[in-house]
Length: 66
Image (cartoon, rainbow, N blue to C red; front, side, top):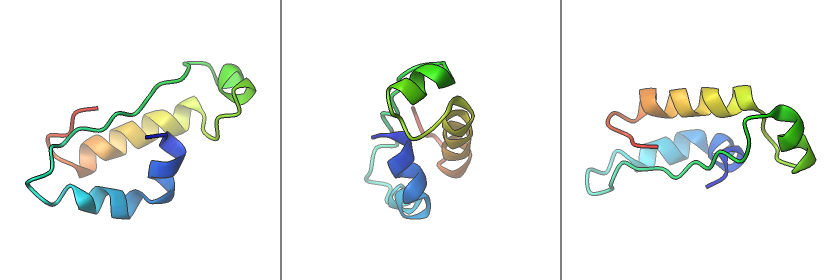
């Protein structure tokens, strides 16, 4: 799942993990560690947004693996 889509639907996404039957894992691809490269790839997020998203997910979904 791409970071910009999780960000767009963050609250709904996090609430899905309240169901204990759901395995707490998110594949959040790191396309590049460089903002210039991300821009050239036409990604709609930057490094700071990616890191903030990952930290918030770990905080809001206990036991989450990324």
